[in-house]
Length: 124
Ligand SMILES: [Zn+2]
Image (cartoon, rainbow, N blue to C red; front, side):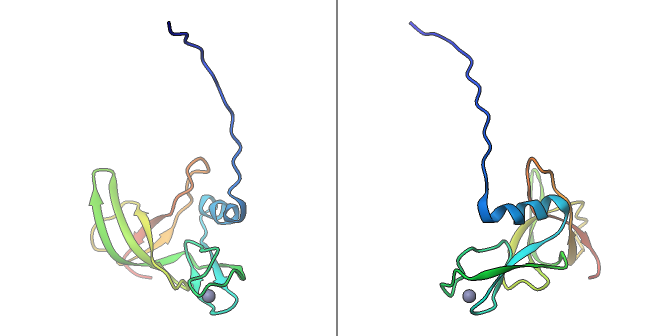
């Protein structure tokens, strides 16, 4: 015997410290964490620095990134980029990539699906 019933659940999940970063992505700016000990700037933010420190502070980056390399898939183009002021590389979705651009600027993303998207440009 099998009984079929519809069950609905509403979730409100907090992202804790990363909420600030995700909100930034939905508003079109890049927030990074700067380590208080070694000054490494991580984007995406790393709560614990590679030096082992937990002490850090938020900084706002320009939102401009250099495209280091790209890959193309069925659902679009993606890049490995280095945001100005960041010590780390990050993977982003490239919006309307034509194939020759070497820089990009961060875009607003959906609040239902925060993500790192840049619009490629020929110059910084
Ligand atoms: Zn550090």
